[in-house]
Amino acid sequence: MCALRAHPAATAAAALAAALLPALAAPPAPAAELPEAGSARYWIQEGGARRGYEILRWEYPEDGTFRLVRIRQERQRPIAGDYQGVRRIRRIREISEGTLEGDRAQPQTYERRTATVFPSADDYDPETAFEGVEEEVQLRVRFTEDEAALEQGEVAAPPSALDPVSHRWQVMQQALEGERFERISHQVVNRQGEVEEIAFRIEGRRTVHTPAGTFRAVRLRRHQPERQRSVRWYMAEGWAGLPVRTVTVRSAAHAERTRLQRIEAQAQAEEG
Image (cartoon, rainbow, N blue to C red; front, side, top):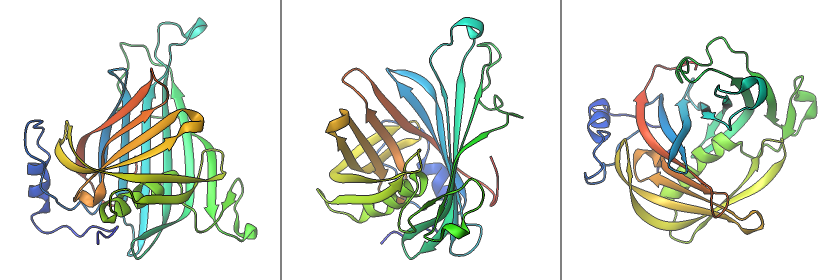
């Protein structure tokens, strides 16, 4: 069974660096443990063009607790009028904090923040574009049945539910343990603060090539015929089930893809 919390061996850093060398023709990377605190960075592509990147960060501030942060930064459609000739870049930051109960992530709080900047094409630097920019809090959730425990601006969600970030982390574990055609279902808080069921089915194993290397992965699919949409996640065998590729088909002409670019270790309690 793959536990949520990784316990790297003394040689994990060397194994990590060797396994993640970009070599698309190489055999699948051998299974290894994720850093105790680290991040995974993904390119976002649509129609063959890069639109931005996504970062997933994880750490365990205290024994039995977790902190997950997902940052998504992407270019949006060109702006007309006063903003013509510049880029419109949007960043979404999601923060999930909670406890670990065995192999289950139990979020206590979840927050979704956004920010937008309008840099010129020549001045845009994705690493510094949002320095000093104030983020707007769009959603704050506390997982509790006691509404008296809510702080100002928070909404309540059932303690048994997950948020979008802890949901992906939880599915990472179940995908590795599941069998083909098995259904993985959870109640998840959406961006409106409402709870909905999200269900994936295990389709099998695939070999996935990414800029970070070649991985043997478990493929999951979520089909939404009422919205003409389907989602596939590819979770690396070993590596705690970390997603190495995702495909979101919104229509016959539009599909968004993410691919793992790199994994990095980082110090505990690093903010970003």
